[in-house]
Amino acid sequence: MYYSNILLKKLTKSAKKEIEKAVKKVVQEYGDVLIKLGDHTTDTEKIGYLRGMFDGEGCITKQGKVIFSNTNKDLIDIIERYLIELGFHLYIKKEKKRNPHWKPCYRLFICARDEVMKFYEIIGTDVEGKKERFEKLLAEVNIG
Image 1 (cartoon, rainbow, N blue to C red):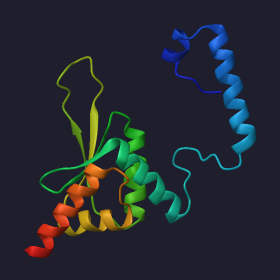
Image 2: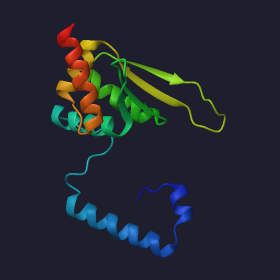
Image 3: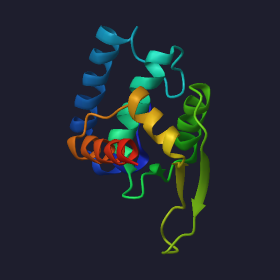
Image 4: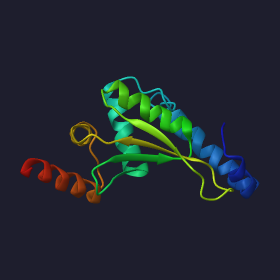
């Protein structure tokens, strides 16, 4: 089983056993539906994954850009792959570290207005603040 080394160091033996027991139970009950990172095969699975990632790791800026940010390059690469497979145009930028002790941060950008609106229509969001920003952007596009 995979556990973060940092997490393991902070847990007691009994806590580790409880977690392992709970994970085994979940795998037994839902193992056939658990999907490894990057193993989503249908567009519906990719869209669901991207929506969850956007809700947790993404934003829509006041300038109307969709941005995903994370220090895990593999995660950003998966998001990039799924978005490209769904027909989006984007770019990735590695941000300079502002602190030498921090990990580098990777940002994935969708900037073209029509691509951003396509993102909202196809991927969407369950976060009210993000919905409001998309709706405001949509209203500006319809007025202009």
